[in-house]
Image 1 (cartoon, rainbow, N blue to C red):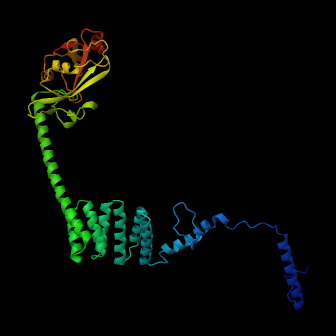
Image 2 (image 1 turned 30 degrees about the vertical axis):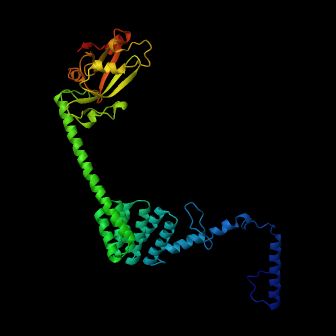
Image 3 (image 1 turned 180 degrees about the vertical axis):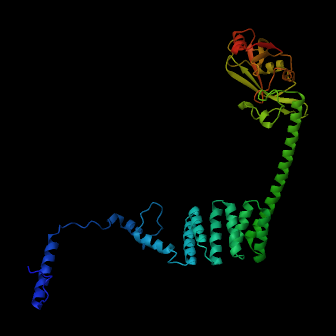
Length: 396
């Protein structure tokens, strides 16, 4: 074929012939294409789902992780583009988003949206005050009362006559026990609207809560004072008796604290040593251990005037469940205590009172409690206990 690019002059007949040739070649090309079924449309069972993805028809905003239509992304860029919107328009767009999330009770997302609106630094005080008040409401619904109060007060800074913000601030102040602030805000609301029922009710409720809180505070202070006085008396009684504790160094001055006196045995932990009602007698939590059975008895409140013989009579008023040979009776057992500081055991005189035993040189209070070991007299169990870890026996 003659090179068409070099041919300069065409007759009308030649032009028509060339056009017909090109049309024929195009038809031939189309006819040569593989015939395929069109499969790129929407399935009948999912057409509504596909429609909902289109920005013109969607009924809700895309959620994190959703596939986003390119047109929606474009619209979003236009909505939040500083070059396409004024500062006020941007702030209002974020306000609209925040209100949407508030409506659907997604308060943290609402806080984020209102915050972005505030960041635009819009110069319209009405818009900024609304953003602060709406963010205050979002904080309020998730009980961030301190942040809610701060935002409501910022809203009032930009719009001093903002009734909604003042009411929100009053509610927050009440929740935070800021009674004077709450009263002032309620009174300011009533100055503008004397029939503001909510403000009247909150003002009364606030006054009652303030009275209750002040009364409880006074009561707690009085109780704390009484507890401190009782503790000082208890400390003086312990110091006067020169009672020793195995978790305190011998060469240092005894530092008596509530922690030192708190029993470490679980059944006794709620019964620390204390003075009786007359304030003259110490009452001790006491543990009696039976090495043979690897179990213990606990006496939560034993007065120091009790003799060891009295303790045994109480312990064995009924036979021990595990004592099949009836070896544990008041007259057939010995009682010991251990001096861990020097590694020895002391045999207790059963006629002695707990106070007399406590005054013995080798006795130390252990873990906030008195601890004794009970074994059958002249038994294998007693011998094994005495010679355990090669401890010498000391008679008291």
